[in-house]
Image (cartoon, rainbow, N blue to C red; front, side):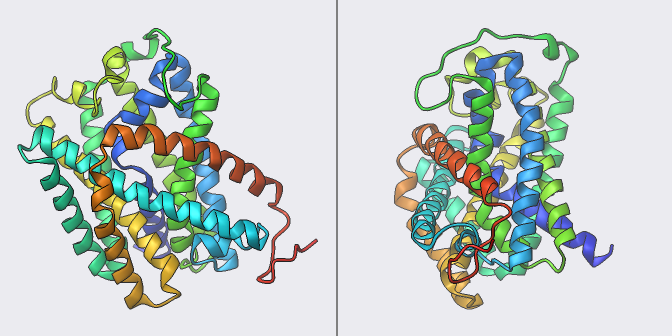
Length: 356
């Protein structure tokens, strides 16, 4: 296969791996952002396909064009210096909290279905992430592509086993949800897409800047975003018959998986763990790249350190972290995306002065 094709595949897999973590594969995000709105929630997932594709392509292409190796460098092209500092702090904190959320998800998964304690699950996730990060940038990209390929295969197998055409006409009652989730399907879809794009932005810049052409960067973003949107649509469709109960459990997708053939259940559990692992590794890699200043050796050890430091935060709990951190950051991300859209034609050089 030509090198250019592999570059696009690696870029798309990095995009998917950065986002398809605990909230997505568990069905938790579907239960929060889409299922309460009935058939309108399904339309929301279709909207996400286009938004993910266009947003990912735009960020990767910009990173390649400006050779912005991390999110701070990319922000420096579009925001004043003072705002760049604020954005850098907020985005870096969110990346760190997402690593903790993946650990919390692993703890919930292992304690509920593998017969381990929550601490065992968090430690297992941490150890696996450290092993992958220790291999460096190329090792991360290859391992991530393999894990994402396996994830998508598992998801398609599960969907084929559970899907029935009747779900397309099924309209669950609209439920007003508590907390920070928007009360309208369109706003909920925007919020969901915004925080996930923001979550992926650091890894999109890190990978996009390393691609040889803008075309490869654009195609990688389009492919990865399309796969992400389709994944959310498939998971939401699968959960429709269980919409009433989905909000009440930490891992809603298992309500469906447990009713399928016995071999599907352990397979999907493995897939969920891989989803958690890909997102934890992608975020740790992006954080390490942000603070390493181009030093590959330091980048590796910083990424490993961030995974280890996230251990105590992971004990807060999966539902609590997902229900607060994600939607709140989503509101903030919408503001950032609107600002970026307005500044699309006006880039900023290193000195911070706007180019007219």
